[in-house]
Image (cartoon, rainbow, N blue to C red; front, side):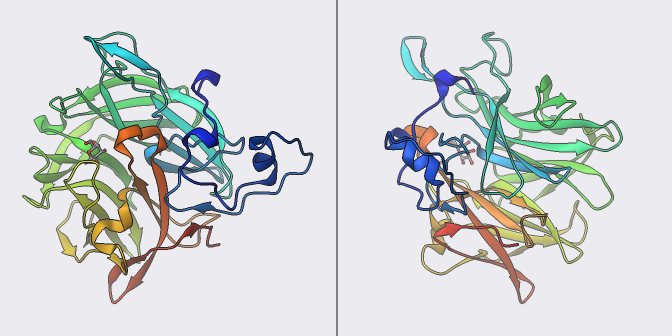
Length: 347
Ligand code: GAL
């Protein structure tokens, strides 16, 4: 992210993270300090801060665990206003990446996939780039990013793919697909226990989900696919493997507005999938506590159990959108998510 794009926490964050480091707090108030207190957590719902006190721009994001470090990729929503045929609106800011070993303190690695100035290009700053996710191919040793590519009216409905030699990028954009000649929006990717990778998106005007098996290099849809959750109007799919089964959390289709989360389970990734109840319980559960699913972090060095990542969208000013990470429990063969005020790693 360029220095120009950097923003102060005072301007854009919704509230002061009670757990942010002392050095950051001191700098924001104009004091100097030599002693930094490590961050221990973040306030759920806030726009969180990176290690230097800048707002985290990883909306609609996904997590890659590689060589003991977590890489968080997401939509950078900080970009200048530009003129689009006489109307001023914010341009796309590309895909930003952050690195952490504790899931709390995030070092910005900048924009790893930038937008293009070419109106014909998929990555043109006036188009839509959402929900980027990165997977690592152990055969080719390439990092492969899949993302939702669209026109401002969401009529293009394609899945784009980019490739890098390093998790910190830079990523080189390859092309986009309508997988199997069907629409794809709100997409994600997932690697199953056999190492097969899948791209999953909302198809048929978001009425139906679609799981597409990718080729062995993870760069293209293989042609093998299945339609899932037919006419159930789901989007924002996220997946995790747990106890020998595959589990899904998604949302309904109400744009930026929160709705009731969906969940499902399958023995094999291509299905059949069986729908389960809303995984959220307690106050605010009917509206996913104000959030929308983005990704599920599988267990790793800093999280003993899977963590559901949600976005708290603020559509009037998307760069101020917040994050909410909640641990997933399994109770009576169902996923259960309870709200917590703060995100702290559960080691
Ligand atoms: C949501 C979707 C977001 C974004 C938004 C636009 O439903 O999950 O990623 O596309 O709609 O309205």
